[in-house]
Image (cartoon, rainbow, N blue to C red; front, side, top):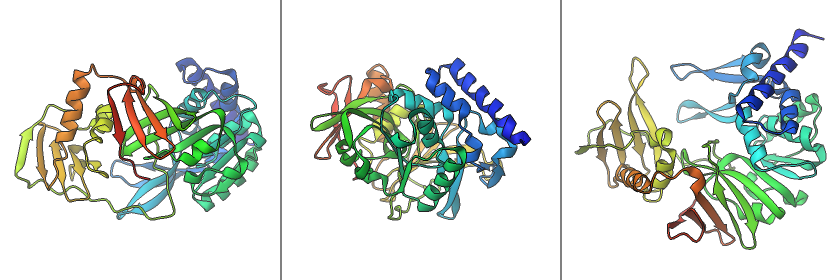
Length: 380
């Protein structure tokens, strides 16, 4: 046996033990899966990004300590607007296992995963449940083929299909659990129809970039309903066959609307709930970003841009907001921050989501019958 074949198991066991000590994994079954699934086999190559934004590949077999750590590994890149951007990744193991435990996945459950990615999560599931109970789909045929080959090398053979995750996988339904390792701006009702009685879904629900969280939904007659998880998490958006809309970048600030603000300049990072609530008033498709210093590459301002040409620029040094265009993009953020603070800064698990069979989505605070309930405009 090579050094790699003997050493990886020590790193995997150490990862499992560390996550047990931090409380990220609680059950013995998932601890065992973490310790015995070879992540480096499923992710033989990954990409790292330097301070200039450049991505370079590395062989994971040469960096076992990094591979068997609570770190997301970027596995695929694509050219977007002249830049290389991640389009697929191997999720942080601590987050992955928290999701599996949140869904209370048990032996005998049939599980559908939306977003095969590297196949690492499918391997964890197959280790725990057996190949016959695990189904995974992804839009990328090449990615699915690679995952199937690597899973087989590691000793796992779950059912994989290259299809649009929005449709689920009806030919193998029903499923006791559906787990999405991608974000959606509307929960597909097809998933609800493929759930077994008392089945559950865990998905990253986002109204815009970084605007949302994991929500744990259960089927109840003509609706899905449940609460967001306490700890915030984020996934890449679900991909479809059609090309994504082009994003507009914020222009250099030359607008005539300037003022100071006390609202955090980067709510998508500093107060994610506020950024999520701001989407109730913001136009659809607002994109957050950062302006970097041309020499140090350090952020100097937060930016927002919209499809109608509106933009906002918030200086990180003096909190001065400059805006231009037909829509004020920063006022909805300030209004959301004001409501959130006046309401006692409610945490994620106080918010919930109802998805009806007609496609309507409702956000609520504390309960579905609460007077603080908002109908959401979602992209379907």
